[in-house]
Amino acid sequence: MALIKYSEFTKRRKNTWRNLVVFLAILGPGIITGSVDNDAGGITTYSVAGALYGYNLLWTMIPAFLVLVVMQEMNARMGIVTGKGLADLIRENAGVKITFFIFVGLLIADIGNTTTEFAGVAGSLQVFNVSKYISVPIAAVLVWWLVVKGTYKFSERVFLIFSAFLLVYVVSALLGKPHWHDIGRAMVKPDIQYTKDYLTIVIGIIGTTIAPWMQFYMQSAVIEKGLKITDYKYTLWDVIIGSVITVVVAFFIIVACASTLHVSGIKIEEAKDAALALKPLAGDLASATFAFGLFIASIFSATILPVATAFYVCEAFGFEAGIDKKWKEAPQFYWLFTFIIIIGAAIILIPNAPLILITLWSQVANGVLLPVVLICMILIVNNKEVMGEYVNKPLNNLFGWFTIIVLIGLTLTLFVSSFF
Image (cartoon, rainbow, N blue to C red; front, side, top):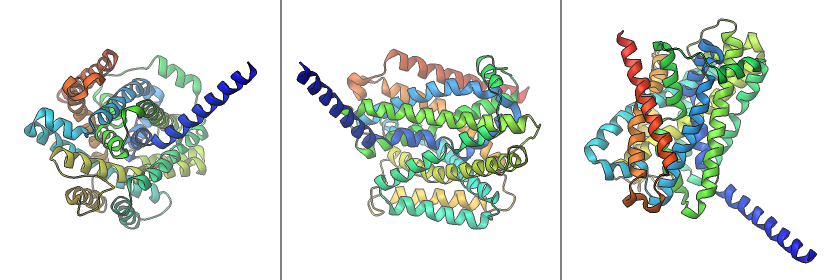
């Protein structure tokens, strides 16, 4: 009897280790996609939200997390089952004309988003007295080299390291000595306002937490990694962990600015301002960690976002795409990636460029375009001819359609409030 129990224990332990090894091998797409959501535009949006409204917008993290998990799971499942990217599936199911208009809008928004990432690189290093005319060109070259000369496996390892560094925002927030009682009350009983500025920030938070382009990157990453349906349960955990990291980092950025800048009545326009303003309020370490997190997030996203954009545009129009492909195998992919990098970096180097407007409105554009992308996703993931037995469950559809209705309602309310 003792031998049988020992044998069962040994077998279970081996299965546990085997599952852990498989999970670590599959780990990547969900965590990277989630982490890159906290880019320069996102950090700016969260910083402004905390500085303007204190803890009052922390409630948005709860629905954002739930929707993020549901949407990313759909992406992963579609990629695993079909072996096709989301852009490819939209073209096949919606037609070329609709696809063209959707992706022109997304391309313009993503050029603005990429510009924001290089603005983050410039702003974060200006805190350490490094000129943008030095930091931005060097960052652009490094980003270009990593993608063009690297492989997917190498790039993924670098991205996972970047993801871990984003947790420095927890340190920055704790150094600001937040009031946890007030945080708890704001989460449970938020003071929701119906003003134009408040709704703009809410749409911006949702647009940066659940960005349109990340739906395409997640699905493309799953395909490029070669995941199968037998890997699904591990991929689901990858998605959940990535969503937790996304929301935790966003939560602590808002807390860091709310407990210092909002309390002191300091208004900011960009994330760099937050890093500088933290210095006299929470000390040099809080300021330095905030700026360092901004730099890591910016360089990380300045790599991923143009890659994701090049991926889905090439997929939508039938061109070859992929980091593991050589330039001659996927010239359209690499030329588009290079073009986005050059445009994004060049705008930052223009004196007096309206970077604040580009940052905030690129995030709002994400929030406006997101319902269009999600509608396409849900229609496709419920198509049995495409997904077979792996179509959506009722709960997935409930979350998906509820998110779309809320986003459309917020957007319409914003436009109406703008006129009145």
